[in-house]
Length: 385
Image 1: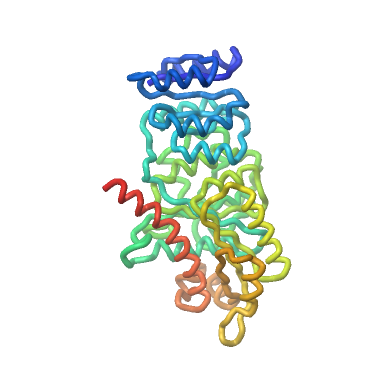
Image 2 (image 1 turned 180 degrees about the horizontal axis):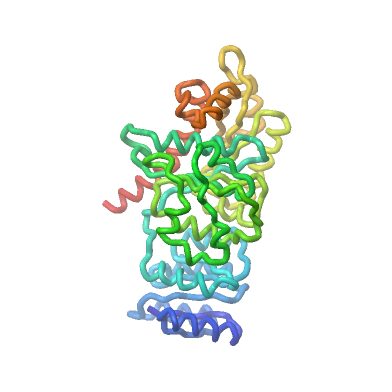
């Protein structure tokens, strides 16, 4: 296997050449993509690691990876990269982004994955829950859906699947309290040292809730969000992805630097809001923001705490449908008594009152997610056969 550097000043070129040689890749510095193309198409040349270190080549990276994915793995070396460019690159299955500040650590890991690929249809689906504002019940919904899907015993769908719930609310996450588990997901502990992420450390970070449900919940201690670099989060997702059939991600309500990239890389997104006039406006605004991304193909709006009449029918169903303009949406009723009982018992509602009306609403959300997650798993099995 070979390694090529394209578009780099002599100082950084020498640095990468030394690193590449230490990893065990013969190095070559090429002046342009045209020369690189000739090298990649040369008969019998073997696979190549391509390092693009010129900002002007960032948008060419995904095209290059898509065209030569069987013969090359493309790495963009840059301090920042546009979310659309990153998503397009990763979706090729033959590309990655590495920041200059951490390339000495991350590039060897990329090389290891390139030499022994772990993808190929074995990774789990990622469904991200994105709150339109604080206090909309996003974490509770993630927890309930995770417990419900992991407890299925019937054949088909995601039955017998391994599920992970990942809480990225590093400042004040409540997932551990909701499920009454010990929070162990202390990602700040390895800030700046993603090379420490291995199978053993992943086990340390996880809290087993049930036989098929693992939870990654941060401990309640102050964390500077700047200490949690985007690459650390994405490296962690890459690490746990092959271990699970489905990963449910609980996003914080503030939009952070990595939020859009994570949503872009998800298989589906569930946007949560509440059924007040201001809450519905914020929900619509959040959905419009996602429309501006290339985004996941599937998106569901969930309206929490929706008012019902004496017959259990949603009072504002028609208004919600009108405001959301025909988008996929599910209303989840307000049932303070059931939620309070579950909270006081230290158990999810899907264990204390799974057959109540609120439980049936949550079951509809779970079925939507099950359909999204089961489709790629089925296709992977069919291709393997």
